[in-house]
Length: 154
Image 1 (cartoon, rainbow, N blue to C red):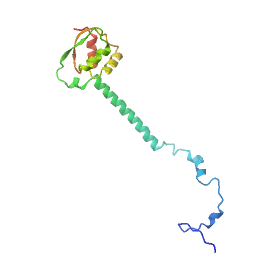
Image 2: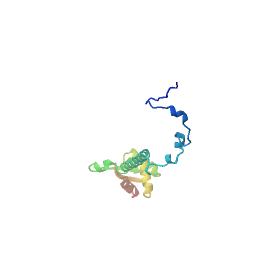
Image 3: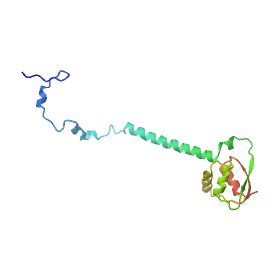
């Protein structure tokens, strides 16, 4: 007597021996199907959208942070909040270059960053440095310091 083949749901599996393999059946045929390569409803994948938004937000935050840093270098917050500005004497020596003057301005506390000062001066047409004494205010806007250094010394 032949025993019936029963699966775990108590279904009769005796007909499985008569099954003929069809090339359209199974996962191999499904992977090669045209239906698998078409996107859903023409919408982008949720993960792709999330990655794109993350990249865009990172770029925007980086640009914003760089802009805020630059503005604080050009126009330090102390120049706006301080009371009466006190002028301090600054000397430009004969033979001084923009590099040496900007480094000394930074060391003496007139500007926040020598590199930003040089970049700003280059973009605004440069500085014609003349030896002499200049009355400068510490933490003043870079443009004001540049104007004073462009004038004849007092």
